[in-house]
Picture 1 (tube, rainbow over the protein chains, first blue to last red):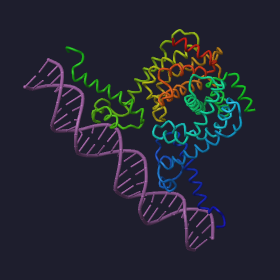
Picture 2 (picture 1 turned 90 degrees about the horizontal axis):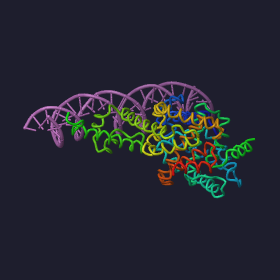
Picture 3 (picture 1 turned 60 degrees about the vertical axis):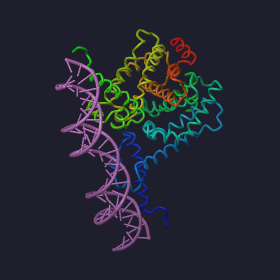
Picture 4 (picture 1 turned 180 degrees about the vertical axis):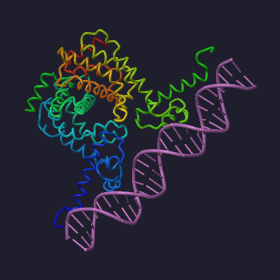
Length: 205
Length: 205
DNA sequence: ATCGACTTGCACAGTGCTGTGCAACGGGCG
DNA sequence: CGCCCGTTGCACAGCACTGTGCAAGTCGAT
């Protein structure tokens, strides 16, 4: 064991990685993409994919796990000990945006009724955090909405999806999209537009 | 031709109608529902469905056409000659809500990448109206958002979806959801929460 | 060079769905 | 009654995809 990676192993790992990446993109385009489509897109034969993942579901599961993990990390990052709910939300949105762009797969898959349950479950903790944050903001009258916190969390999520879609369609550059998403989420929560803009600008300096 | 509907014909029509209704519900639960699932749920044999619709795609197409038509009608209803963009948006949301609840299928199907294209196309005119309305509001400074009008239209749509989901999950009653949706859409567009609440309340008297 | 791993190409069984054909059945309507 | 239309049940071909088995190939590492 001279080195921890033999040549062929590292090559195999690279393949595995590429399969995952390409599967992400391919499933984003078509949630029903077959193993063959994915394999070919990854420049590999179908059989090889089965060499790395036991089944289609196993592949997707790995994908979702990675995405949820990254999302979860980003979501709680950078808003430790922030007392203002509005600022916390803004920071969270900006942090999530960084990686959400890559993991837009969640957007596509989350909508698929069947798979949705699984994602919902795993995403539960993140959502709970969001709800708590939103509830605090509503209690402190920083936010203002006729919706209860959990419903507002849905709006929060869907707003992010909407902005992502806008980016996909070229209506926005990915660069400015993060700030826009943050501002929009805040205003949807009832924060005055001027204050939201100001706050996000300050965070983004 | 004593009457315009012979007995068997009216029976057939009723079947056709029921198949459509049940297909709506079934596809809502599972966008991949097979013809057999749909037929059985409608208390009919698969073969019978093919007697009414040429193919699965034909069935869905009919469904989408109906939904889009109803949606389109509701969208433009009741906001003729309304000068205030905010009020027009509020009226539109309230009107759409009435039927959108029934046609939640669009929500499920609209997310399916393959079918989405078709829906997007047919929904184009409606979306264009929305965009025009939003743009006017932005120009007149009634609305305030960092997003261009088309992107704001996405947010508009997704917000409706989010509120529908909240209703599905029992977080909101369908009764109050309409008003909540309207208020949330307006605040997301940058209308001050107080003014949005007030405006919607006035419309809903 | 030779070993070991990853990969390839092919073949195969199994499954589930679609769309169609056809004979039989049933119930209103003339 | 007997006609017609819709409905039923069954059977069938076709297709696309999944997951597996196996022999042969490839390429880096030892």
